[in-house]
Image (tube, rainbow, N blue to C red):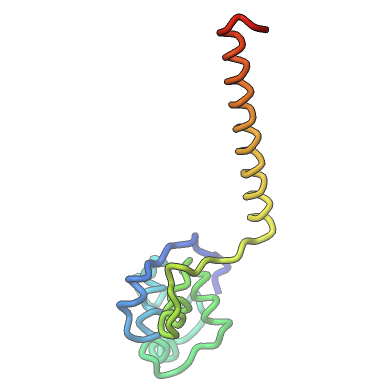
Length: 135
């Protein structure tokens, strides 16, 4: 299997809702990942043509490990989003959990924005004092 993971690709709720089957959602996943030919994806997933074909036409289930590999290779979660849609979830309100590093980055950005706001206030106060002849 290729160890390459694709860059994340957004999948709209509308695209998911248009797919009638799990197999169609897998095809969407592959298309969004830039796989135009099944053969390359089959090679990267290390599965044969017959098994891949059964997955696409919902003739055979796919193991989580292979589904995860498919989504990693293609850079999107279309099949899982399709399942959630089928279960009645609102895809527009779902969001991924933050990793610890994403949380740290967000908190640091918030601290920086607060510090910049304090600086602007101080600059405004200093500017007012300078304009009125103080300090």
